[in-house]
Image (tube, rainbow, N blue to C red):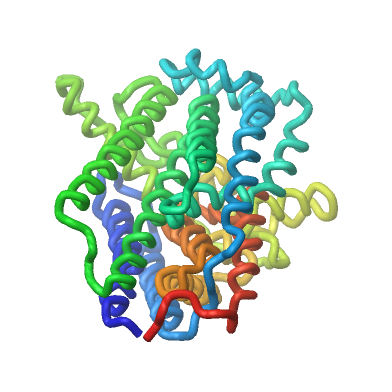
Length: 433
């Protein structure tokens, strides 16, 4: 195995643990005094679970990983880009009651765009949302691969592929702006950053050294910084618009609040608001988890990890299924399961109980480490997608089980996971000698 991979093996885990550690620090030592009565149990559970993530990742990085390059990647890429562009029109209308070309009208007020989206979802005047959701779910395995495949195969892109890529990114950004939501831009940033990380890792292994000049790395770092700042600025502007300004900040209608002096200058108030909003966004789920840890376990039959599965089963088969979930019990305790977060672990625990959550996270970590190895050493696009989906799941770990909340994300992940696992024992990709 190339010695260069030994220095890259733990890079995603190191970054992931750094991020999760920051969220824990923000929760326990940040600007909010959370009314947690079982802090020792909460911290102990989190440490055990994060240890399981690290152990699983390490095991995955040292075992034989499946994977090989996809010979027909361009077919997936073009179908996905065309589907993304085509679906942007009915999707925007179904979820907002407007058309994509109305985007200029919402640029100045993202708060209003979000409220109009909620109103459109409630009234469902279009009557096509269920059909659009089904189409988005079925085409999601193709749509999700556009950005990664473009980056990982950038030397092979033709002018048609570049035009399709521009159209795909434009469709994502317009849909996000029309809805006034952050999920689309956040996922886009994760897939961009993760794909570039894979590309750089592959180049290091191929050349057996770090192959980029300082100028190129500076340019890439500057571009990434600009994207991060732009994403955060848009995120902050949307939150300010939804909350009517950047004055005193409360979470969950007053569970915790911060107070600022009226004499604070506008810049200081804005910076404090940004820090409080970021803290509430990244760490509030741990409070929901602390409430769930106090409740008794009642199984949700393997469906409680997914909002999509649980809600549809409740509608068609058994309405009582939701009432057995930890999310419902936390809601009864005063922590809304629709407006607030309770971490990924609470969703998983509804199916397996909290003592078995570390085992599930161990398996997740194993797949994460194995997929990273497959993407780098075997050039597997399917492995890269599995890695990106699991990276997204780790980033959302303090919030919810983002990977299984919607049909499109869940189906896309399962699809590419099956494709990747079927590559076990097939032809070699990059040289492992």
